[in-house]
Length: 119
Ligand code: AMP
Image 1 (cartoon, rainbow, N blue to C red):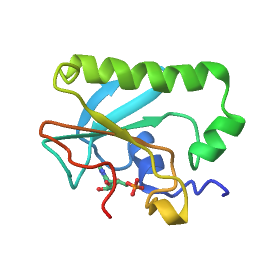
Image 2 (image 1 turned 120 degrees about the horizontal axis):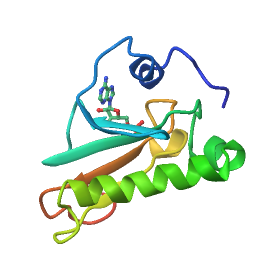
Image 3 (image 1 turned 120 degrees about the vertical axis):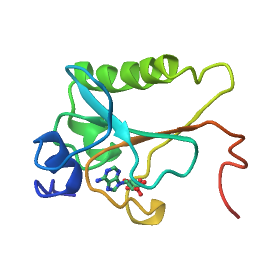
């Protein structure tokens, strides 16, 4: 998948459209999902231009990969999600219904989240 520089998360990273920011550091930006599926629904995106988990894990530096996953854990701790628990989801490609072609990790929490997948 080639990276589309006009995708909505690229525009958020460039500051061209707003987001409800939750966290930012050298490696990632995190913001509330515009259509939350749970009381807590945060998207964590790398600042680098990676279309998907496939692209990221093939082409990102070790520092970028560590930066993303350290941030996911830090955000969950900052939001007080660890005790009750949370779910992380990444959708990659057609069968997963990935909608936005910039890698993002969903953090979902705030209620019992049910089975991992709908049947
Ligand atoms: P996915 O299906 O894994 O690609 O998830 C894309 C997510 O991006 C969905 O949960 C959308 O609600 C969310 N989304 C789309 N546009 C925006 C936006 N402008 N700000 C925040 N979240 C968004």
